[in-house]
Length: 281
Image (cartoon, rainbow, N blue to C red; front, side):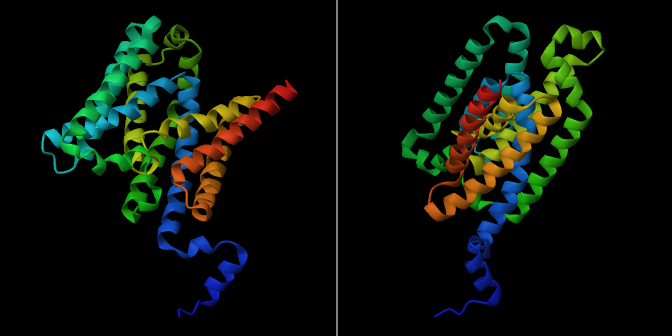
């Protein structure tokens, strides 16, 4: 029978025994990187009313992978990322030209994209190899992938610091932003590419079906109770981190997939902040 070390006994007694497993420690570190990333990006997406846009990007992942498989790529993930960038640029172009029908156009592209991806990947009954992408598996993250996440977080923080005010101005009024000599078109394309990269690189651990929820819920919850932009960004980060950590711990003890559990916690926070915001309004 295995003898526990003093450190393991201490963890078992304090309720932190899940940290004794390497895969849980890596997942915990991944949560500490992914959730702030989504908290920051989510405020920019919600502010620019791009929730539907990011959801369509998530759905396009299947088509990207399918194209990679058809082309015989050694790593279909690269094809997925390249397709998502092109998809994001195309949607951004359409949005800027047809503002009145943007939601309809994005819905058409999203539906077509996921249908084509499912059709190709399901041919010959091979879709089971890719079904894990639907819900993700953050417990499978590796040390090298943690480095990638840290780099993505650093790039997002840099973009937020340099262009956050420009994005806020753009979300308020496009013409006003142009009058202030803000490079509106370039900013929109750069932001679209950034969203595409983050969504695609995170899908493996978060999942296609729920990645948009993790992007939107912390920011939406923060908006319910925030009085200014500083509170808006701060609470979004706090809610994202809290949802991620609590969801990971609950999933460990309940043997439920981590991604969906994080979304459940984030959803409860949203409803709580919504009721609280209505109460103090």
